Length: 357
Ligand code: NDP
Image 1 (cartoon, rainbow, N blue to C red):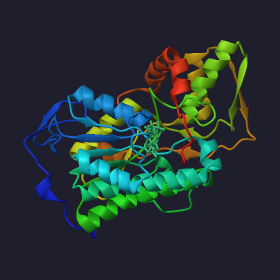
Image 2 (image 1 turned 45 degrees about the vertical axis):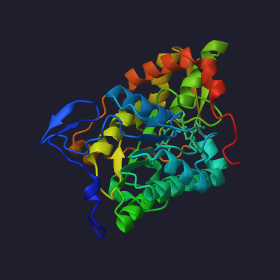
Image 3 (image 1 turned 90 degrees about the horizontal axis):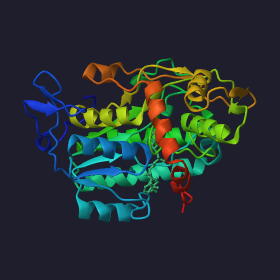
C-alpha cells in the first residue's frame, strides 16, 4: 500500500468461504473477503434515494436483518454534532455512504454552492463519525464526473486529477473528489477501512423523474411519458444528441457495492460501470421506443452537451470477479413499468424541500 499504514487487520475477519455480492457462496480462491454477519448493524446513508433504496433492497434480499436508516428530517447529515450523536447511539458496524445532493446539468450548473457545500459536509460528517465510533468498514460512493473533461476514454482510475474538470459540474466533482481523498486520508492516518467506488450514470426505481432537475435518462422517460399522455407529436431534447454515455441499473450497482464491501480493500478508488456506452440520440430512441413509440425527437443544439464522452474503464472491477448483469433495454422496460405504476406518487414524493437550510 503506497505511503500508507496497514489496515486494521485485527478488525477484519477472513474465512474459507464468503458470500458474493449476488448472495452466492464462493470458496477459497474465489471471492474470499470480509464475512459480514447477517445481523451486523449496517447503516445506509441516503436510503430513500435511487442508490440507497437499491442497496437496502439488495441487503434485504441477501438476508441482512439489522439495517439502520434515517431520513433527512430525522438526521441532517450536514450537522456534525447530530451525526456524531447518531453514530454513538446506533453504533453501525458497516456504512454505505450514498447520501448527497444530486442532479443533472441544469441544477449542477445553477446551484453550484449547494452541490459543493452539501456534499462536502455530508462526506465530512459521516466519514469522521465513522472514524470516531470505529466503524469496521465504510463504502463511499463518488461519481464518474470526478474525471477530467478531456479524459482519455475509457476513463481509468489513475486519470483522477490529470486535468481540468467539466465546468458544468465542477462544484459537484470537487466535492466528490474530496470524498475520495477523505477516505484515503483516514485510511493513511488512522488505518480506517474506508473505500471509494465511482459509479457511472445510474437509473432505476426511486430515481428523480422531476423534469426540472432529473438526470438525462429519467428525464427522457418522464418527458416521453408526458408527451404520450398529452398526445404530443414530438419532444425537444437538450444538446446535439452526439455525446456518448454509459448507464447502469441501480440493482447492478447495489450488488457491486455489496461485493466491494466484502472483497475490496484499497486506498485507490474503483470504477463501477457496465463498460458499454451509447449516444444520447441512441438512448433517446430506445426510451422513445419503450415509452412512446412514434413520437419524434427534436434536438436543440443551443443547449449544453456536457462532456463529449464518459465511459468508465471497469477492468479493475472485472478482474476482481464482478460484472453487470442487467442490459439497458431490460432495465429501461422495468424502470418504466415502475415509473408508470407510481407516476403521481413519484412526482409528489420527491425533494419536498430545499436542500440548503
Ligand atoms: P438521490 O437524490 O436519489 O438520493 C439522495 C439521498 O441523500 C436521499 O435519500 C436524501 O435523503 C439523502 N440526503 C441528501 N441530503 C441529505 C442531508 N442533508 N441529510 C440527510 N440525508 C440527505 O441521489 P442518488 O441516490 O441518485 O445518489 C446517491 C449517491 O450516488 C450520491 O452520492 C451521488 O453522487 C452518487 N451517484 C449517483 C448517480 C446517479 O446517476 N444517480 C451517478 C453516480 C453517483 P431524503 O430522502 O431523506 O431526502
